[in-house]
Length: 250
Image (cartoon, rainbow, N blue to C red; front, side, top):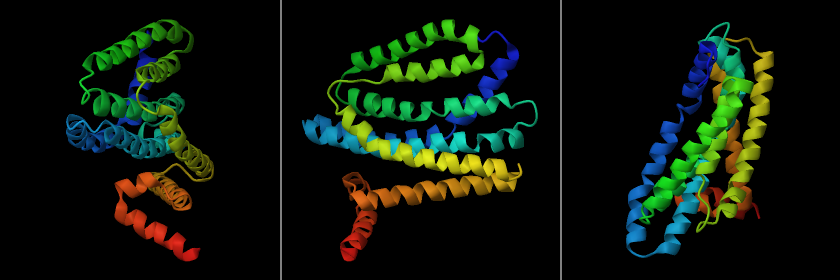
């Protein structure tokens, strides 16, 4: 569909790197599936919806960190690992990284809610609609924008996968928004480092570690300030110690 072999190569490399960390998040989310199936089978629908919300919160927190992190280090990563002539991948990696939160959201809603609720038809329709939208947008976008058009088409296709209805998607979006803002701050810091630091492997590792530290610390501070209930449900011991510090300060 891309037509030009060079664009195909750029897109292929950028997509593989951008989606590589997804395996970790999807694996973490899959751990919840047996619990969700047991809860739904017991008729505890309200508890199941709460579990979906908590899982969505955690996966989106991880997803925004990965998405903005990949986009942030792309200007250093591409020259170090791909070499000269692959500068096009910097833009594509940054664009494709936006797909990560969308994939995580569709995984939680589809695999961890629709399937345990025996809504296979709705799940299949959402996937089919996403595939159809992907094909249609590719036809119109790619001739105009090359690989960039394909990347934007993938983003929109995954948005079409998102299932609305029984779940409080607005509440989940509201809970994930602070992590998007934290990720944006990390992205700006990483892009600044990319401009001032030379492009070497060790400095790329340093950028990754700095980004991780900034994101994790800022996220914990946010949870500390808001006394996040989701963190308390997922990591009760960590949340207990963190919130105890706030109570002592008060």
